Image (cartoon, rainbow, N blue to C red):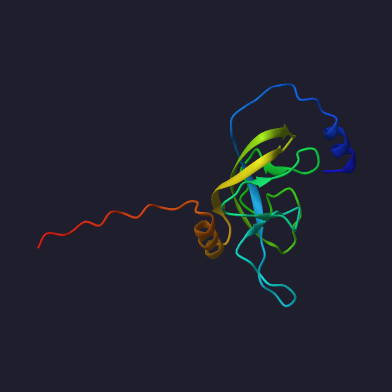
Length: 148
C-alpha cells in the first residue's frame, strides 16, 4: 500500500453497501527464536512486523491506513504469496473479515479479522498454532467400550 493509495482511501465515501462476514485467505509470520531474538507463541502480520494476532480477540485496523489484509484466492506457499518474505516461516490459512471492507484487485482490506483455519505450512508449526488458536481441531471420538 503506497502513501498515495492511503490518501485516496481516506477520502472514500461510504456508499451504504453492507455484507456479512467474508472468508478470505492470508499468510501469517512465525517468529522463531534466534541469536538476537526470542520466539513467541503468536502469529504475526507479514507486512506489519510488530502486529500480533491474539487467539482470543479479533485483529483490527483502520482500513484507511492499513487494516487487515487478505486475498481473494487460496495461497499455499511463499512462492504464491504476492509479497517477498525472504526466509521467514509462514503459515497459510483462512480468515473471517468484517466491518468496513475495501476490495482490491487481489483481495480485501478489512476493519476486523479472525483466523478460522490454518491450512498450509510446516506441519509442526501448523500443529502448534492450531492448538493455540483453536482452529482445525478434530473432535475426539467418543470412547466405545468393547464387549467382554
